[in-house]
Length: 248
Image (cartoon, rainbow, N blue to C red; front, top):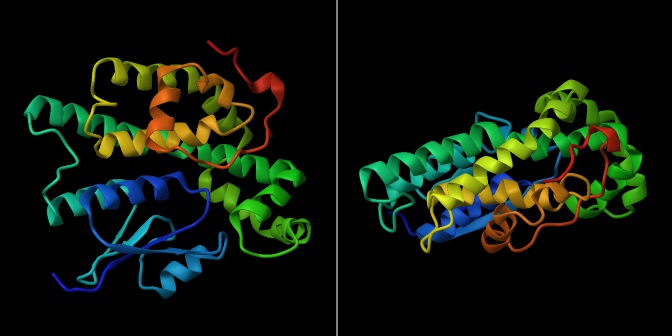
């Protein structure tokens, strides 16, 4: 393998980027993390030779480019088989891969939609986003400047009122599934793997939200998420209170 390190491209607040970083650390692959400017990152990625517009985006030492936390896990498992991201025993391995896929396809998009819905409907969210997710000065001004690009953010994530309301209504049952995976040992073992990194990063982002975070609080999922991802910035409440189900 060439001596030069890999490069991981991401944006602030991206929980899939946190999952990808955990996967890289698990594999022990040296890499340089490059943070892109949110909103401008699709153009940056195309200029860097990536075909898609989303992060995480990984350029491997041999020049290959991989995008998405699931694809990154699979590519690194092939490139560096040990330590594995999956159990050795076939049944346990299948369960872990099924959980990983569910976490990426079903759970992972929810925090993205919730945050982007808030950016569209709450001006104060745009100021918060400018403050914590961009290196630019004067967050109040930057928050205003973000206004024209926010509809594209919302469209890209599919963060319509109907979709976000459905996400919030389904969250308790989705979190029940995370707790079930923990209870059955698919997640949360002594040795963490791809499914842990995939799901914990999403749950940690949800926990940080001052509205839906209370749906996570007190669950086994909370302890799990904080174990895997200790830190994530607080996200101000943005959702209408009547959209929120009663916490368990």
